[in-house]
Length: 126
Image (cartoon, rainbow, N blue to C red):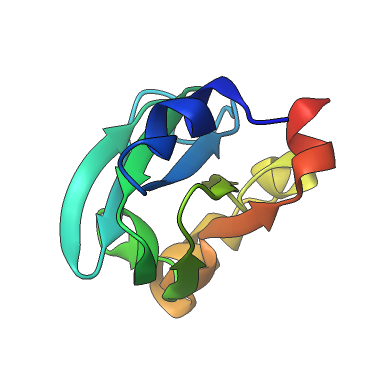
């Protein structure tokens, strides 16, 4: 059974990339920038999601806030395929109460401050 988004893309051979940003206290008022193949294509606010129609092919996807940027996430999109990604900040939970851990993420390991992971279809429908 095709999903509504896949039906919409069926006639033009496109794939659908969905990026969900988790709702978190850290960076609540700041938008995360979505970068595809080195070009900023969108911004994503706290707790929101974004749907992008992409032509079939191979893409490098990253998310960024200031100088903190994830490592490149390589993604191959097939015609009519839906891919779900999740992004957010690794600075959460008990780390919010550790006084100097934010400095570690910001200055020592800025590529670890944010995360970008692929979600399976089962996880995304729950």
